[in-house]
Image 1 (cartoon, rainbow, N blue to C red):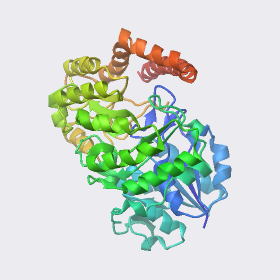
Image 2 (image 1 turned 180 degrees about the vertical axis):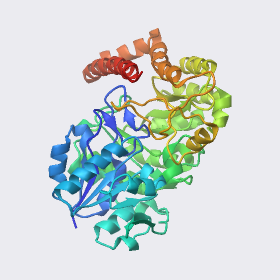
Image 3 (image 1 turned 90 degrees about the horizontal axis):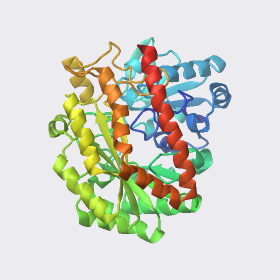
Length: 478
């Protein structure tokens, strides 16, 4: 039976699916690959992967495509659930016989609530849903599919859990699905070279960060990996499929969590001459960083989160500011670029800790940064902490974004309101970037590459426009 794996139209510029850990509209055009949908799509012969936001496909055109399929599987998220339900209902209205399933972290944690969100949803996939999707698309009775929730006689029924995949090599590569169904030129990430391709070499993360969505909802805290040979073979295949790609990104929660394996993969990539980047914790030594650099590593995506050690302990980050300083210094010495991420509004933020984090970021002086608001997603420890301590600023605890897709502040603390936390994001960006060294770095890259010149000009315009829109949104809400 035919199957459409769908990331539906949503807010303008909203990146709510796939490997994205930041389900909201960003300050500049940014789209991650829908890898979480590409993986089950690769298991289902004759399927199609349709990622509407990057190609700016509207609802009507999306519905025309969905009309052709018996099964439609939608990747949803906490911020996009209401919108995704409307799309599902429109699909059912046009073709009542279509079977619609919802997958993703929100559906995994709140399967009953997700099913109740719309009568158009026939089933929900819990935890890892790759083989759940495959079995549904094969036409198996819903009651026989492990890891699935559905309605029966007006009541929600939860089938037994599906075991997490132990041998990740059993999953087919996503490369051919990307080639068949996606226009890779439409995918942008501000700190990655363009065009880029991202993929997973493993799932799960041993870290215990209280805010991180995927390990607590789908992937688990054990890092389950593909073999180095399997990864290297797909990378060689991708190089042939996408000769125009300038950078490959390993989107594992923490690619460097298993260092012997990371080194082995790096050595196997060296003969391919690829440029690659990955997520890493800020705890590697210089020798390891230098080895990875020699094997093609260009950039680390690093979650620093805060410059206050008490906050780092509360969120179970597992890395201190001193370790972060040493790591960053080693990266600078080895010539590895860092995109650092920071979060404002973590427990228990104060005006003083915000200022401390800003000064810490300026001291680290990494190439680029992202500043996010703390997002207490259902299923995370941060969500439970906020619920128990009364930190939510609104009754609707899942209302994480504004109507235009921009993230909003949902937490507040004594002495620090949600409005203050929201305003600090813009101040953080301005005081970080509007300094001589970041400005000179950006100008240098623009002078070295004409494509980057054009891109940075566009991103600069989008960045300041988004800040104006954020302020307008807040003013309108007030």
